[in-house]
Image (cartoon, rainbow over the protein chains, first blue to last red):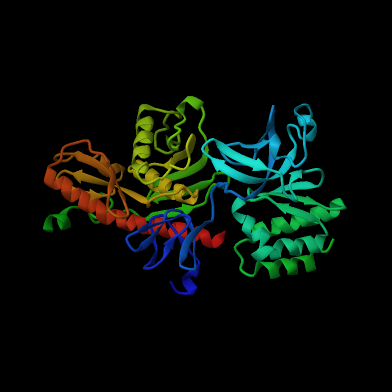
Length: 223
Length: 236
């Protein structure tokens, strides 16, 4: 695989690489060939070949930070809709402070939004946790929904894009891997400005050198 | 081979010539994956939703995900309006499409879930199930469903004694000599057959020839599908 071909669109059944490579996500090894099992961009690093999805639904993975809506309150936790086929469960024990079972609805109730981390995925479902910094109930601000496949573009390389938006708009932004983005700033105008910037990114997500493009956009679109 | 030259198809095509094909991916923004496939005047649109939770609960399979296809002809797709809604024919084709696609989709990671494929025929001029399967294969790939490979489908016809590729309506209603026999065949890119149907009379020797013709034709169709899928990535 030459440098130029490092990122190209792959369709299921296509041979991505031949020879001494390791099969990563969305690929399979047959003989000495690496075959794609999904539609997306092929990427190779350190002899590991994987397929980055371009479209489709959100696939939950362990460690992902997601934003969801509380769908139901049970005696020992909350059922949260994070946009997957299976609803996720946030147990009471995964709240950082002690909560008695009678006060469970005072912490979060149906309709509340929550930032949580996926700590386990098994056959029975997805388990969430809010025992980390930056996680917990969404108190104020606004939620923007984008296509989950465009989340990497919103974050940018090592967070370059999201930091740019944070600096420009003076807002705190939490990006859920499932495509929900929480923006909270001091003024509503700032939040709306950040929202516009994010929607601009999702529209232009196929442009290369997007961070510079967004910088230019901020220059043109002052509040 | 001399017979092949003498044989005249109603629309002047060569015996192994497919009608002009067109394919497009990502045509329905609300679906998780979508595609259009066209054989001349036959147009099929496929939309994929899911994987999502299977309802009703008693149809859930805890071992692996389910593929559910729905084939539908729009009432204005043919010259005489057809009654909308499921019919004996459309239910049969839905099931056939499911069987044609099942060997390639890998739904082991989606227990209790279902992937819905909705195929609508906007315009029909024979070979609609083949166009539907071609569109559905592209739409499934576009939805990010893990698949072993793509499938391509083509109908082989036997008009009197002559084998032809990709039959149209006029040829389907062939009445001279032995009449028409329609053989829709679906193949993976590596040449494995996932679906073959036959109603009519044909000799074993000719059936083998028909499969060989389909092998060549599906290669051409695969190229069209592949190019359509590669194009969509550039836009997004």
